Length: 595
Image (cartoon, rainbow, N blue to C red; front, side):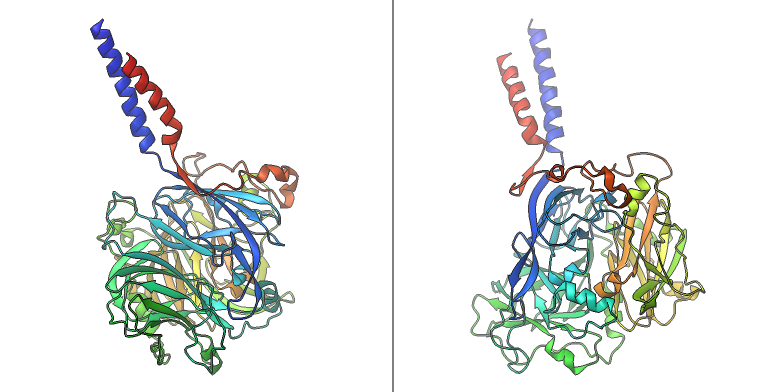
């Protein structure tokens, strides 16, 4: 009898231990309920309509940890369709959640739709934004912070604070007016302001800055160190970021820890994100200027377009005064490129996994596909202004590429995008790149425009291995950094120059490759990369979500609108299967004690 009771107790203990380990090893879920709507705000002292998320401009910070599962219910309260894209989130095996026209039908005005994705094996600083119809020009953006798991060490001490900063060019025209201008070949011109977290400049110069404009203030404590996550969320302007009398210790960019180097300023191009550690080591005789000023502009009219915020020590003796800290010398055309080349991967640090970042050894992998992508400024094609890559201006079909692929619908797109510029007139087409699954692709961006272009690839981090002025040739590979080129998702390409990246195509899906400059993206400067596993399996790609929205030729499959609403009014919360299993564990403990 005792033996039987002992066996039963041991068996119960083993069950409890198994359930405990299973429950507590589960990746958490976080739930959010967001409403995207118009609000009235005055970023530059003039009341205008901006796009807010939950009434906030900029929107709320999505703060999660590696491998967490994110569920965000979006209510579209705009007067036009909406998609949010998660700039830098890789959506492993899940391009269904990418939030761009190639993978998702837009969320109609008045509808809800729920994004569900995992931040698998990622850390770092990113942002989300409204991806359709020039909407980012009116707001609709916010930050994403992905923290390390506790078991993975961070390669620097824990900062005393974590601060997200959005900088970007801003126009008092609405996004609808701006996109009409772009369609008609009208240049965007000088922005009305450079914003810091949705606010205009501090009145550092009474001749340049009108009175009554709200400005952003960051409050800090002397002697403490803060992590500043800085994102350029603007339309088309490269910005130089600097803080008066303070060094910027670069530690991370778009999911990769970097070799830690001090900079007095940093050029941050459209769509890029950086993390700096800034130590409050000054005497606080006054407040300090934080500046974001335009780069690669050649007109005195741009002088008014300088963003200025205030860094305020708690023991400050007075307001900031005097001239702004000097920007880089615009005559030094190599300054920004050399600065970009100096950013290196920290190959001895772990990121989302305990192994060092540099163990990937990307420089020893054989390249399977090479694409030289040449862009040109907007030109008339069939009577409309369009921008191109390799002579093709992308035309978004009414049926998303991913849905057409899922339902084997012919004629929606062609997998024939040329790997180099063809000797033929430019055209508008829906042509995409055929990426080799588990291949290693080399992409060279050749910029034939007169402005800096930023390029972003969804679903991946790529290695920035080289950049230079002139025309890329096969011999240019001899200049590549094949050991510690930084891995990121957005890279700049200077006018009259090239940038080379390497990317491992291990993430199945259809992924958007685009310029982040809204004016050139809107006119067609994008392409999609199709990565298909030839083996039919759900291990490399998640199935079609059950709440998919249907449009185009698949509109007849659309369910009633009410079925789009997953939940409503739920506050953000974190749960795991611990909650679900708690009652079971309690019952087993009770049974164990009773026995």
